Image (cartoon, rainbow, N blue to C red; front, side):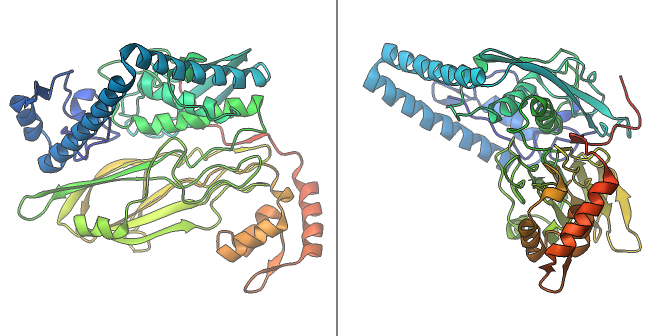
Length: 475
């Protein structure tokens, strides 16, 4: 039995252990080879002491580690019950049959899809070390018969910063994208993976080699899902949504209370799916490549020296389309301790989430120090800095891309967004050609038809993918 989880801290140079600007894996905390925590029911006291001495919150980390051990124990008991009921040979046969079932379903679904090959390029803003230098993601999807190949050859070489992905993470991103276009949601096991080959050349950001830093690899993995969707959208445009917000943003604030008692706040914010061929993108939802719930504001404030000033969806941020992208989310924190280290792992500040089939890109992400004050200062997407008492930090995620021509959006859907405060009257006119007035807003259908006809004549043909190429193209 096996469990895996994120721990609040595993040592290393910064609280939370996951800064984007670490440049080698040795700065990212404890690296423990396969060792037994228990031997014949007895704890490995030396290993427990090593862990305790190398993390900032040993009580929390060891408590979480014991929770993982308890989960493994429960799973082991369940396996023992299955063995007692079926015997080893029959249980192995059942396991093999379960995976064979998933493989048959996967190959059947792949065989339903037209054969073809398509490539797509997207860009990560930078790795925080080489600030402003875009990093290329390049994905080629090849589908033949009942098999699919997802090839990351052409993706940028591994970088100095900690956003390098491992093969396992890149493979998971690829499987997620591929499985999303299949007609059946089969059990997720090795049977699925047998039908989908993933190629990620060693030494690239999709399969980094030691001593590459990789604690912030989640950023790249999330972006790989959207890049793979871009290639799949060429082959299967009726099955693929536009780009999401770019994946979750990692926020870590860590430091010490006056009595030198440590605190570490780790949060991951997601918010928006891209517009889909049949419906709007989701607002305020976890990314499809994650399984996350929003932190309670009350819990954040009770357990950390932080005050949350706001937490809200931001109007006019989802990419316009026949089916619009999900709206961006923002949260603002005030520091109450003397000081702490703030780390932010985000992206899509310069390369916005793409739209599909005439849909527009979503809005970029934004970071700001002391927003609304005379001392307001824009901050980069990835940063490590000291946050002092009374200072305020605000993060706004990117809005997701839209799908389809915005001038084909049902005015009734625009009216619903107007009532919900997700779209302003000005944006309804600018982006959708919908004329609305009053409070609550009422749509003038006749004026809308006239405006849309004029806008269609002015703009010309829309691209199938809406995004901006990088200003600087690295190898």
